Length: 237
Picture 1: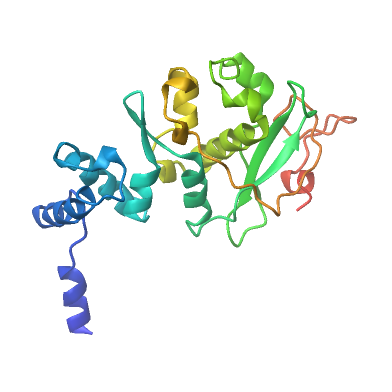
Picture 2 (picture 1 turned 120 degrees about the vertical axis):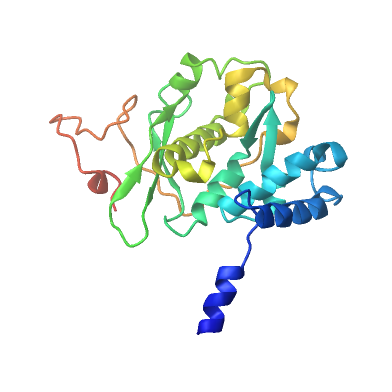
């Protein structure tokens, strides 16, 4: 037992917290920096610092460094996650059930929307994120940007954004304060100015259930009585 405790105390992890940890981080980053499997932003002498930072981020969120590098994009000079990676990281963190989606409003109209929701494992309480609608996308200027995916893939973009908002309001430490690539594109500039792979394809949850919620509202309110409903009842859980 004493030997085990001593060994654990002597273990060094790759981070910026000590000289030994930083040296380990650099040695590990060098391997990725010289690999042809990682994206250009992390490969070669000029991008060694990027590789170190990405590796440290992977350690902090307990993710594969290679997966972090393959899903961390630089959009208009700012780092951002691919949506599918952020969703996968949330689903695999071990604290929550996989994200599910509820359709709201009327499909094909501005009221069409999505609410992403989950539950903490071991709990029956529903955790719902903010509602995202086509009306919001238009009001924020995302819908009409040149090359916008909101026009051609509204269902996908609604799920992306709803999931990102749920994660940011429920477990912001998972995103580390970074936006998704499609969020950064919507806010900063034209989609056509960014590589196509910065917009990734969402994997639809085959088990996601669909219910009708009063269009244009993110609160769970009984249409006839005006009563605020219990979220568990609203989602039929």
